[in-house]
Image (cartoon, rainbow over all chains, first blue to last red; front, side):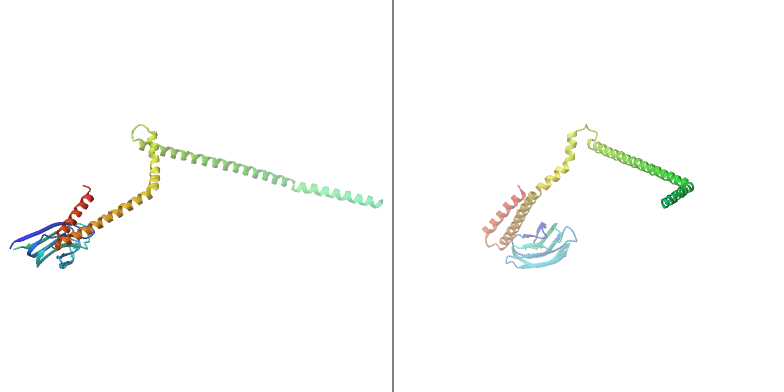
Length: 99
Length: 171
């Protein structure tokens, strides 16, 4: 297993943020971690593929999202935080198996 | 003729009776009258004294009022001067400027308020336009990069974003 970490410190403005992943040439998303600075902050998080399809979505997360998943990845995906109740820094981490 | 004498006699008699009545009346009530007159004089004197006392009292109150007013104004002036000078040499022009400053500031703000509002509105509008434009550009860039169909478009959008960010940062 070759795990690659896509990590970014996201600064929320007007309750939203988005950013692209690196290009995956065939990988498996194993874990999604999105952590707000304040544990009372509520937010939504999703991943969109190159066709504009939302391949994963979590809503009304309080403070921290830590999900074990198994989503095949290819190409570039857009990570998006929305509807955040606070404008603050978020840690966004995708753990991907690129074996 | 005889009738006239009789009438005259009667008149004299009546006059004598009247005088007698008058004398007896004066004798009976004359001293009372003088007593009443004395009382009236006494009351007049009292009224006069009350008026004098009232005038004196009014003057005393007025004097005290103005004396306290003067003391208050003097005290305020001293306090203001002491606070202003803070151990420095007196600067009357500076004091005048200090005293006039709030008034002038208020006047200036009032005069410039409309102009300032207009400028703020323009800045707000332009700032909002820039923010909105950047958001759109960024969204387009993310989409273009994600789709990977047109690398030139992706690079162009990235370049536009970089330029806009540089302008916003003021570097």
